[in-house]
Every structure is written in C-alpha cells, then in structure tokens.
Image (cartoon, rainbow, N blue to C red; front, side):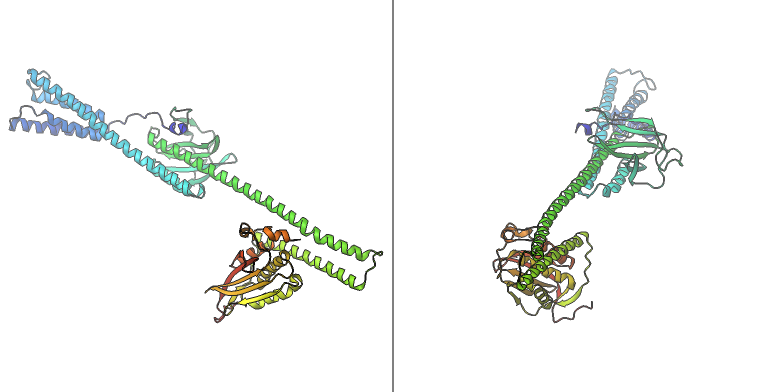
Length: 530
C-alpha cells in the first residue's frame, strides 16, 4: 500500500494567471468603480467601497488566490485615489475614512482568499472524483475479464482520455524486446531521444519524473523524427517482476504531468501488472493441473494395462503350454476346451485394445459420427446376440414403452455404446444376473435407452464417478476379476459425440442402471434424409 501511496508526485508549480483572468480583474474593478460613483452621488450612502467585494469574489472564483489579492489591492488604491479627500492622492485627510478603507481591504483579502480556496477545493474534488471513476473502471475491467490481454485496449483508451494524452500503448517484455499489447494510435512509434520515466521511491517518498536519453530507439521508430511531445514511460512491475512498460505521448508544454494524471498512470500500471501476474499464475496452475491429471491418467492406464494384459496373457500361455507339453495327455474334448479358453482370452485382449483406441479417439476429438435414423430395438438386439458368449447365462429382457422412437445415431458408435455397457455387466456381475433393456421416449426430441442389471450395484458415494476414466467403484470392483475401468467412460464419450447424455443411477433390479438419452423423433414421423 505504501508503494502505491508513493506514486504521488512532487507538487507542481502554481498555474500562472492567464490573460483572460487579468482582463476580468480590470473589468470588474472598472465596473465596481462606476457603480460606487453612481451610488455615492445619487444616494445618501457616504461609503460604497464594499461593492469592490463583489468584483474580488468574482475574480477569486475564476482565477484563484493570487488574482483575487491583486484585485483587492487595486480596488483599495482606486477607492483611495477617486473617492477619498484629497482626490487623486494617496493621502487620506479623515482618519475614519482611512480606518474604513483598511477594514474593507482586510475583508476583501479574506473574502478573496476564502472564495479562491472554495474554488480550488471544488476543482480538486472534481478531479478526485474523475480519478476514482477511472480507477474503478480499470479495476472492474481487470476483475471481470478472462485475461488482461482482452481488456488492454479499453484500458489504454480510458487512460488517453482521462489523462489528456495524445497516445497510450502497453508494451510487454518478450525476449528483450517489447511487444505491443494495445495501442490507441496507429502507425510507427515515435523515435524520441528523451524519455521521461516515472521513478518509484522507497517507503512513502513521492515518486518523481526523470528525463533521460533513450538507450536505443524503439521498434518502428527509426524512420520517424523525434516526438513533438514528451514520451512518458511507467514500468509495469509487481513483486520484483517487470512485465513491460506503459508508454504515453504528451503534447510538449514544458511541464511534467500533474498529480492526478501521474497517479492515474501509476496506479493503472500497477493494476495491469497485477492482472498479468494473475494470468501467469493461472496459466502455471492450469499447466500443473494438466500435468497432474496426465500423470494420474498414465498411472491408471499403466495399472489397467498391467492387469488386463498380464491376466489373459498368463492364461493363454498356461493353456498353450499344456497343449504343447508332450507329457500332458489330453483328450479331444480337453483340447477343444483349451482352444476355446485361448480364444476367449484373445477376445478379452481384443476388447481391451479396442477400448483403449476408442478412448484415444474420444480424447483427441477425432470421433466424427455419421448420423442416420434407425429403429433402436433391432440395433440393441443385434449387439445382445453378438455378445451372447460374453453374457453367457445372464438373461436379457426388453421393456418397451409405447412405440419405440427413431434415434439419430451412428450405427457403429451406438453398437460400441451398447457393447461396452453389456461387457461392463458381464465383467462385474455374477452368472445368472438378470439384465433389462428399457426403451422409451424421454420427450419430443429424445429417445431413452436404459440398460440395468440385478448385480451388486454401486454405493451412493461412488455412483457419480463410474463413468470417469479407469474407475472401478464399490461392490462391483470387488467382484471384478478383470476390468480396465474404461468401458463406461467410453459410453459417456461416445454418447456425447452423438449429441446425447449418459448417466448412471441405481437400478430397480438392485444393481446399476446406465441411462442413455439420444436425439430422436417419434416413430410415426418421417425420418430425415441421411
């Protein structure tokens, strides 16, 4: 906080009275003199010198303290010369008139000073309000933006307007050179030989502007003459890290920027620095999270591969070894059973490799479905018939509500979805577990397929994660002799690719239910072509 307070500058020089203020002072004194002459001659008022107070207040409001004091002195002399005896002389014969005139001068000086202070404070309050509004706008832009880069353009536009600058731009450090992030102007940058830099001082010491020769010309400015105005630079830094610079061009007027403009530029540079630091920390956190998830995925995949490859390979090697051992006498029936065992384990390996490839396609975003209209029940029946050796003695029943809808799917992907769900049932339920396939219309544009079983099910705490990659949840994992934990994640990924939604919940049969909602039209409607 003390560093931000230190951005205040040394007090600038007082503004010199303008020609317009001088003309106002002379005119006010002349008009007041005429009014006093008329009042003293046309009425019985012996001393109307208080009229000068009106002129002094008017000058103080417009010009400030110094013109007001000068006007009071001129008014004092004018009244002494024109309205006191002896006329046209500074001498005053009547002591009472002298006392009244001195009192009028003192009151005029006090009134002029008070009026000038009121004007200065009102102007200061207005400048502070404008500065606060500008800083609030910058803070709000940075707080609500996804990245600092996206709001750099409106920020430099706001600074150019509120700090009365000709051009403002932000340069970010990029390998020793600054890359322009946002710019209110166009064309090459000016090749200034003198750069005025805001130097922050330690503690509460006010910062100050320092003019110095530029070490090197900036990019794009070598073919331009030096800038007509001052080139200002404020470093964008926080926590010892310099991100770049805030640059500005100010029309040459012989003066450095005022307190308000400097404070606005300095605080804007601080806010931009904090925003850039936030972006960097967010990017680092995102990279760390991606790396962490990647490591977790690799560990899960290696764990899955170590189980799902070694187990069937060990079974194949043991069975093949028995067949090749001449000392082991086997009947033709035993040989056939051994061959069937090898074939079954090979099918398991094939399903595993296919699942891993499907996951890689889903993760890489290369899954491109070819959508067509199909009757849903025949597709499911074909998948069930093909997987009969895997399901074995697990009975499959169908529950069709009303007229089955026509679903808009890719036939191959839909077959893979149903196959993965049924294979998951076969891997995680005991023999004889009933399986039910329910088909219904979820709403006017959706068809719902629910595949549920009467197996051990999943605990309430794990049911929300069963569709995550390489997840084995609850009682189902305890029964699983094998299983890579990828089948239901493939179901969800492929369902998403088809424009549907896959969810898991407890089955009314006692096990797990996978509910798949897919785009569909009523069976009575004409399907879309292709």
